[in-house]
Image (cartoon, rainbow, N blue to C red; front, side):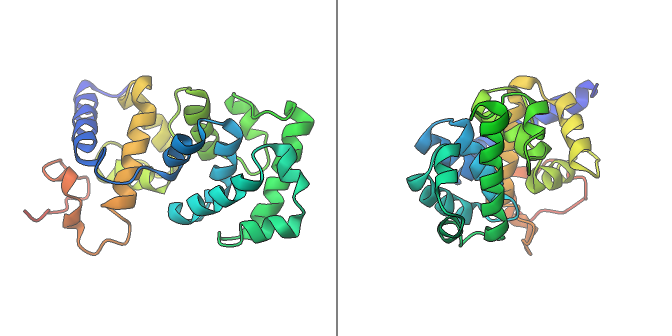
Length: 225
């Protein structure tokens, strides 16, 4: 269990990020899609699969185009593969992803009666679904406590000194000890917002990460005032 000082520091980080980001920078793509389409487990799963190794801005537009044609496994399977490729062609690895969408849709029908399962174990049985995708689906579609560790969460939770970890699995376990379950989805969302909009991996001027000025940064960066 994380010590009290680290838990208190976690709450300070969360409060600062909420104040600096919420309502001031764009939400993650998954949250935007939920506001538009509702917390549909299948649509969330499909958007997550499309988003792998792709930018959120691209994934959002491609997901909306796809959802005009298909919102169920049966409707995905009804689209000829070449046509499906054409719909999602703007996204990276679109041919492979078209195949995965077909395979996932068929597996949902064959093994889960056409429904996205609501347990981690069953989600991880689905082709192409790893812990990151499974946790995001559990949190956003089924409102179950889960922390989705993507590249932003991995990088920034270490930079902020919340964790000292090398792998997403280590980060997930460490963050679970710092934050109560009721905040797991929130800390994920805030770190993604920070990473996508301010503290980007390619930022040459680190001082733009102004929401975290004054916090003890693990890498010892000196922020400009």
